[in-house]
Length: 152
Image (cartoon, rainbow, N blue to C red):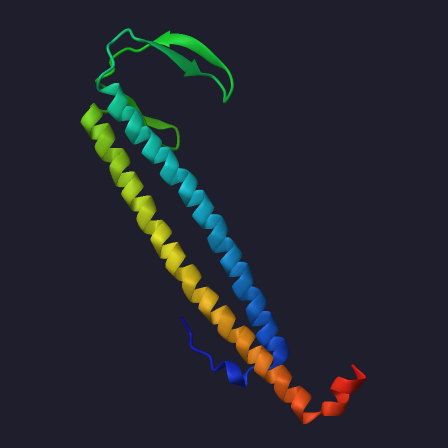
């Protein structure tokens, strides 16, 4: 990250910088929400793999066709679930492999969330510093030209 002496910037430059920082913070918030959704999905998948361990072959199940439409089905090979590994690819694994895979995914996503949170904290601190310098510059302008403040 490039260091800039904020006091050397003009008010319009500071305003533009603050606006960019706020856009960055908004992007980080969106990223955190997306990562949280992925984290929850992987946690739920790990829990489902745990439940699958005690499931017998032929056990009844509702198979989702959409988010609100299901058909009845029966479980086959519960000891070898198919895992969605991305971009339309599935891998047949043991239950232990599935649980391990989802634990790794949860750990990875959690680490990414922590990184994004740290970036957000840093950007927020910089934004606050920019706002403080802007306030000081406005106060200095008012002090240097008190009649302009009275007219405004």
